[in-house]
Structure formats: C-alpha cells, structure tokens
Amino acid sequence: MTVFRNAPPPEAPHHAHWPVGVPRALEVPDESLWLGLARRAETQPDAVGLEFLGRRTTWAELAAQAEALAGALQAMGVGSGDRVLLFMQNCPPFIIAFHAILRANAVVVPVNPMNRADELGHYITDSGARWAIASGDIVGELVRANDELAPEQALQHLITFDFADVLPADAAQQAAEPATAWPAYWRGWLLERRTRPQPKQGTSLALHEWTDVLARGQRPGELLTHGRDLAILPYTSGTTGAPKGCMHSHASLLHNALSSRWWHDLHEGDVMLIVVPMFHITGMVMAMLASIRHGASIVLLPRWDRDVAAAAISQQRVTHWPNIPTMVIDLLGAPDLARYDLSSLRYIGGGGAAMPEAVATRLKQEFGLEYLEGYGLTETAAPTHNNPRGGARRQCLGIPYISTRAEVIDPDTLQPLPTGEVGEIVVSGPQLFSGYWQQPQATAAAFFERDGAHWFRTGDLGRVDADGYFTMADCLKRMINASGFKVWPAEVEALLHRHPAVQEVCIIATRDPYRGESVKACVILRTDANGAPAAVTPEEVIAWCREHMAVYKVPRQVEFVTTLPRSATGKLMWRTLQAEQDVRDGAASPPPAR
Image 1 (cartoon, helix red, strand yellow):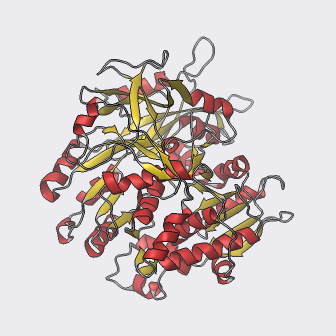
Image 2 (cartoon, rainbow, N blue to C red; image 1 turned 90 degrees about the vertical axis):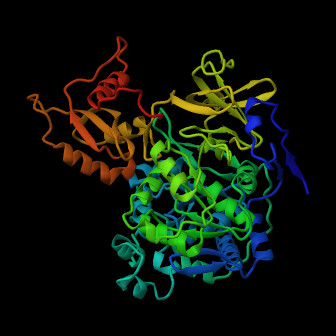
Image 3 (cartoon, one colour; image 1 turned 90 degrees about the horizontal axis):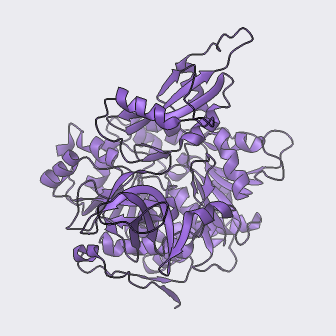
C-alpha cells in the first residue's frame, strides 16, 4: 500500500515531555477517506456505529446508505471534483452524506447551519456547488439564498429531509413522556414535518426527498480518489469579511484522524460523544473521522444540552468527549450532577477558548480528569498543538503535535524569536491545507519557505517557553472569540451595512463572563434631508441581525454614535474603540486571546 511518510520533526525541547508510546510522526495511507467507513462495514458490519437519540445504526447500514446516496448523486450529475454543500445540524444524514459525497469522488462543502440566506449565497457561488443536502428545519434559508442567484451560479439539485426520518419510529411517543431526556425546546424541532419551500418561478432547482433518494438503491461507479485529491472545502472568514474556502486533501485530514489512536488513546470499542458541530473542522476530523477510522462507536447529539449530554455519558459509557470549555462549565454547574456516572470518561479536551483554572482543578479533583487543551485552525485540519496526557498545563496550547513543527517568529522578518518573546505562531506539517480556493494572492500571503520547510502563518500571537509549551498572547487578525466561535468583525460589518438605517458601523468585542467575549456594534445612523437620524432602536437593529446572520455573530449590544475614530488617511481606528470598551469593561489585563 502506498503511504505518505512524514519525517519526524527535528529534536526540540518539547520532546522531553512527549507522551510515552506516541510516535513523533505518522505514515498516512494514500487513499480516500471513504475507505474508513467501508472497512468498518466490512470488519464490524453488525456493530452499532451510531446512536442518535435512541436510534441505533450499524456500520454496515451507514455504509449502505452512503453508497445508495453516492449512486443517486452521480445520477444527478455529480462527477469527480464537483462540490456538494452540506447544510444541517449534527445528525445521522451528516455522516452518511459526508461519506456519500466522497464515495462519489466529489468534494464536501460543510456550511454552518446557523447561517442565514444573506450569508449562504456566497458559499454557493464561491464554491461553484450545483448540489446541496440540507435538513428541513433550515432548508428554507438555502432556497431563499438560491432564489437570488443568477441561473448559471445557482444550485440545480437539493436533497432534503426531516429529523423525524432519522429518529426511532416511536420517537414522538418517547418525546411526549414526562420522563424523557429530551429538552422541551428540542421536541417540535426534531419531530415536526415541514412543508418544503418552493423555489421562485423561473429557477431550475430540483427538490428531492432523502428517503426517496435512498430507496432508489442506485450503485455508484468506481472510487477514483487518492490522498492528494481535494476532499473538503470548509470556509473560514478573515479580515476582508468574505469567507475563504480551505482546500484540504484526503491525506491532510487523514493524518489528524489517525493521530487520535495515539494522542487520545482511541481504540475499537471506545465510545465517542459528539456534540461539537461536525461542520466545524474539529468535530469533523477529531470526532467523526477519528471514531470511524478507529472503530469507536458514536453517540451523537444535535445540540448542546447538559442534562442530555450527562445522561448520554452515563448510560452509553462514553470514553471520549471533545468539547469547548463552555460546555464543561455548564455541565459542572448542573445542580444534580452527582446522579450521573462520568467514570467511563478517559479523554476530555478541546480548544477554541482557554479552560478556566478553577474548572480544570475541579475536573481533576472530583473526577480525576485531566483537561487537554489544544490549538488548531480550519487551515490545519484542527490540532497543530495539544497538551500531552500526563503532562498537561493549564490555559496552554500545549506542544507541537505529531509530525508537526512550530515556531514563534517576528511577523516582519519571519525569523524565529528567542524563548519567551511574543511573536506570530507558524506551523509546518502534513495536516496543512493546500491553499485558499481560487485565491492565489491570499494563499501566497499565508505561507513562506524556510529551512526546507513549508510554513503556514496562523496570524495568532504567542510565546513558547523553555520546555517547548506554547501559550496564546493575542491575534494579529481582527477577531472576536465568542464561546469558541470565531466572529470576524469585517463580515458582520458587511452584513450590517445592508440595514437601511445604518450609515456606518464598527464591530468590537465586549467582555462576557460566560462566553468570554460578545459582539458589540457601534453604529452611525443614516439621516434624512433635515439631518434627523433614522427612527430605529438598538433592539430593532439586533432583531434585524437575527434574521440576517448566524446567531453567534449577532451583536449583543448596539450603541448609536455620531462619529467613529479615523486616522489621518481616513482609516477606521477600531483599536481605539476597542481600548475604550476595555476600559468600560474594567479590563485591568489584556483582552482574552482572539
């Protein structure tokens, strides 16, 4: 079998803290990610691969449904390298559709299910997707976005389903029982069957029902993809406000998926709780793909709810739980936590925000669990750094990951800085993306070559200590970290400028004791001919935002101002507004890492 052989990184201080038994580099098979599920169906056909709110599906059933969907996609015209949008919450169809797209030799475009119609058009047009698969609760947003596109840019086929199609037959009865673990706000959302939105007249979008498509039983053609072929195109935003597609190959994703066996002690027979979103690179690679590759059964939740999560860990004997710190904080705040048995957990960790010292201490003292913080980006298929088992440090990114090199450099000279000095974190390794989709200039700016290595500039400021552990200092890029969700102010500003009452806007961060940071909009209102500002309230602006952008981007505060600070060249001085807000928030220390 052909493999990609990754040379071990040169000897470095962090290797003194390297976990016992973990290789410093991995060999990665030159193959499609599809083969992970195919082999699971071959070697463990009758084992339960997925549990979703009471419905259990074997590995063989998952693979068979993915094959049927792949055949249907090819019958709809999907060919090698074509892009297919995935737009849904965590649910079985995500796993099935993800692998079906790969089986059809195509490329997955995972889209945040919080996005609204105003945001979705960009993903359709930029990726060039002509096919999409969406859940019935949010498919209307996708149809509305598609209605506004020119025919040559629009979707041609849309497969949709209701959650009721993937729940147990008696789900409605279970949900109605007083003792059900389902939160009340889940029940209608999961069980409701929705009327499909009809595309506007003149469009050529064909709608297909999930159950009908699978029932056709169509067989896909030959599997043609290999390790270097494009597998997924997840989008990441930036300072320009326009999300950019990150080109990841099968091999770049497979490296980090394989690494879980070693770093996180993940093996066949383990149980993975997946409640982090699978459209996001961490949930996709380090949870979904890692579980399938190593034969760990998946317990899947559509959204976070601490009682449902705690019950799942206790009843399903969950061994691995990747998360974000706010989930752990919420779980430990449950007044009846003692009635749940969490003793099966062997791995708990995540990233996106620092884990508070007090919470990590309680995890260790009460449950014997060492929270392993890590660091990575969409561009790096999740981790480039992670804390080692038995050597974790608090509020620390950890040490460079398997097969990975990392340095702290001067952002101007690109040369390494001495230990302890703050600079830009750069990384080199097999998990790096190959570039931004159709953006050669942005790609060129993101990489540089030195010492025979291909380095990616993360844009994050940090430092490395004498032991080789990295910590975050700040972000070169303008970004707000709200409960681990990255909010790019330029993107929110671009959307808010569509509001008829907004003349100009600047987005900054406010301190939030639970979310870390929240979004604030400083808005100059339009005026009429007499100079009177538009008649709109901050609450109305926030309500408008909820209709036009993903909820995590929505400003929690809107302040009307008459001017915004500018430089001599007319450039908006957002840092000035941010510094003033930090003072109002009582910031005696630098703002949290963004």
